[in-house]
Image (cartoon, rainbow, N blue to C red; front, top):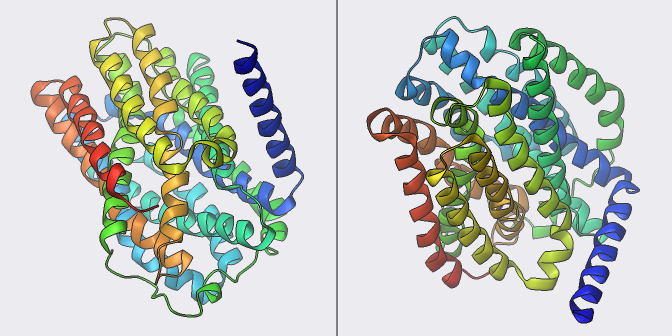
Length: 401
């Protein structure tokens, strides 16, 4: 018992020290806040999906098709992102992607039908894709230049933004604030903060990621064996995340009978545990190893999905999403970092290649789960994702990290 308490105390000290260093490192903090800005808008949008579904008169399949727009934009922009970064520079691309993302996320709630909703989400996906590659490359370059570990903490900031966004949205829904007013005001706030504070700091982020590879990596390339395995694992992580992103509020409201403001708390709790795990990730990853933590990701995600499927009341469903956040938390930071280390590819190209193919989880997830949900119930779609999480254990065992 004393040994366990001592280990917990040492781990907590390391986590707090790491977080203290992160928040006192201007470039790391600015990059982390960029991650947070992305998910602040994303979490706010997720909370309003049930309202959009109702206002447009959509069933699960139609909503799934509309949600297909975001991954279409991601898939289209990801291969172009390294060229844009090379042309305009890492800092400008990160700032430009952030501004575009904020404006884009304010658009979907204004759309009068499902086809325009699809088009708006394509724009969102394209903006998020550029921002995603740029800000992850920022984190990688800072780690290499300064000899620090910040990737997991940056993804923790992403989770913090999602929690703040969905939690605030739940409160605003309870007070009767419309989605259009909420997302429009939030977009303006992100725009102002990015231009006034983030842009000057991000201009100092090292641009040397591609040069570090001696020009040996291409801007975009077909994946080799290890990158293919990473892509499959990442696809499963993306599908598991997509269950919470796109369907948590809808499932809690429509299947478990939760009021709209309570249904929004599913994503809030998901983001809470994801944030906690990611803030500890830069301590946990060196201590337990990337492979062991990927095993944890797969097993915990499968268990969480089982909890969600068997839930008969909103509280149990929310608990399942709470557990799911812990399960998927470290998948993205581990795999983004691993993709940046694949030999023969520059960090930006490795990230873009991995992201392009792994985001097929986002591409396939929303419509497939929606179509399955319309025919058999959303719980069946969730069960298929849980089965894939179990199958990903084989890929985790074989991939070289």
